[in-house]
Length: 226
Image (tube, rainbow, N blue to C red):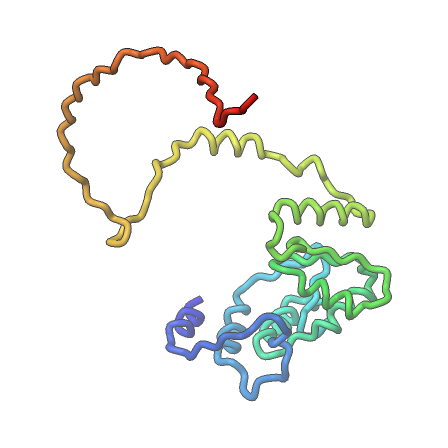
């Protein structure tokens, strides 16, 4: 931790990397990062336990070693080694894995897995399948449905577990009043109140007169001779 703090405290140039492609799987750097050695030293004091599920190292494409010393060595090389994602996916497939779940934003890895194992009978689902276009709850529900349709056990009774109690706590919490940020652009000073105007006198209306309509008299426009 102290080594990481010293490393991050140094002024270093920043580089913007586009994540549309696998930029982190390029060739090995010419020199290893300075954080690799301190990271390896810190791992010596970390107690590693045997995992309940197999974990694959994305640099070697194989499972992590079972011994703590070998696992630390493989983990320390993560900072100086490129990612072999193709070999990692193929190793999972060779070990009998047929369902892949992508956890994280987007579904780029799902597309890569489909290309690597093209033509194979696999199921690839992503938690963020819509890349943020739909609600996260909807994408999660669709993922669980696809996962269950593939034949895996899903505890659907835990879908809304604790939701009612969380809703009650949220509604019982006192919410602050509406806060609006003001600046010189939207601030309006109070205007002085004007005294009320005197009521205008009522206007007298003229009495209503009923108009009598008389039929017009017919007058010949020309005379005829007998």
